[in-house]
Length: 375
Image (tube, one colour):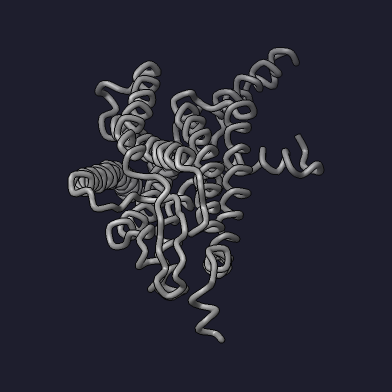
């Protein structure tokens, strides 16, 4: 009886069993969509309209936030579609266009991380050299998008609606995935293309690691030198520097209080506060000074940590093969798929990284969602 059921089972039953085994992954993808879209939309709104920070920092935060919002909307939705219809999907053109768009967006975001790393390297390690102007930033972002489109054009040929045959059930299903046929020329072209893409991705990730390693070394040297100057300072000088001037106040009002009119005293007090603020800015620690650089450094670290497993899973296993969907256990299949989709976590995590490093951003988020917070 069971054997007859296995042999005559239809595609819908096979698809239902496979999709049920991926429910846990579907829940994760839904969380990616909700947290990623809402979080990055909040980032774009707050940094675009609520916070007054330098355009040098804001430009890349806004562009990255917009890209992450698109990725968190499109890529998990596409992955969810493939999980729900693993062997029962249809629509060859939709499949090709979706593969092209999702891969293009992801690659553009990765190249943007590289551009940010280069900009931070110039700012921290070459502060007196040529820097990225606003025009060059826009040009580089446009070039990254154009390059991504060009690099992923072959996907329109290599991906599409494919058939998967299950010999145990004697049924044939359809899937949106990598085309695998007997055409030797197409197979060679696919292999050459994917080797090139994997090498390019590895080069981009390696460049990001090298640039931020140099940046981190530079910041560490600044912190170490400042600590050495502080420790080598004579105690007499140290006590002098711990006067009100070091604590952020300037003693310019005290003598004037006796002889100056009230209006003049108020003017001097205002001047006092301004000078106090300037003093505080000039005495910021290197870590505070490079807060946005450290923030982008962590974003890059998460990018590398999530993209490497995805690339590795792509190299090791073709999740669109018949063997993958007919021979693998549910646990092994789910493990490869979650690694394949892990890169999405990079785009979801970025809003939380902004909140970790930027107290003003956290305050604006509380103002946005909590009515009781004072504005």
